[in-house]
Structures are given as structure tokens and as C-alpha cells.
Image (cartoon, rainbow, N blue to C red; front, side, top):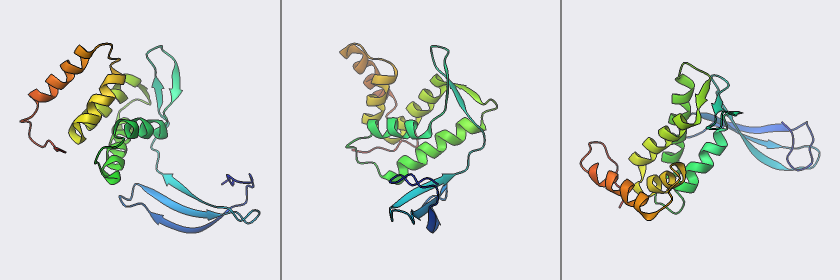
Length: 160
């Protein structure tokens, strides 16, 4: 692993342990050249996923980009980090378990929308406003009306 501070290729693992949900291995590393310490995470990847964008362009799937998008939607919301990590892991597992390694980006958006809808209504609306490209206030009203119709759905996790 390359040192992020000095670029040395000779870093040493000082500590390894599974993450809380055992979906990754957390490794604490040190660089013998500069003494810099940093953490890496190692995850199982079943296959290389490629996203097919709306324009037809193909790009490698980036788990970190997915996580950043979800975290932006959940910014300043009272949702535990462990629940966010479970959501991301669940989405990635669903994508990897699909039969094809090329996945339309719309499918990722739908999975995120479904996950956020069950996690936090405000984050769901935030994500939907970007994903569905809202242009007017009426669009927000429509999606809030859609949520209001789901209030009695079993298994909903309300955060209020």
C-alpha cells in the first residue's frame, strides 16, 4: 500500500480487525520512511461492476461515490452511521448479485431511493430532488404527497 504522505510503497500493517458489521477489514498502517500513520479498509468485491450512464457512457462503479451521495442526502439528519453503512452494503450486494456486470445507473438510483425511503423521509426527498431533476416546487409537493400515502406501510422506520 502506498503511503499517502510520502508515496513510499513499503508500508507496514500494525493492526487489523473486522469492521462492526464484518463487511470489511480495517487495517492500521505505518510508513517506515516518514512515520506517517493511516487507515485502509479492505472489502470483498464479487465482480467488477460497470455503470451505463443515461448518455450511454460506461464508467466503473465507485462505492465511495455512492456513499458520498447517500451521506449528502443524510447530512444533518439523525441517522446512525452504522445504519448508513448497512444501506450502502445492501445496495452494493444487490448490484453484485444481479446477473450482469453492466448495470444501468438508473437501477442504482432506484435502489438508493428505496433505501432512503425506508431510512429517512427528508433524505429521500433531498436525493429525489437531484435524482429526478426537480425543476419547480410542485415536484417537491408530488413526492411529499407520495410519502404521505405511504404512512401506514408496515416496516417503516420513522425518524421524527
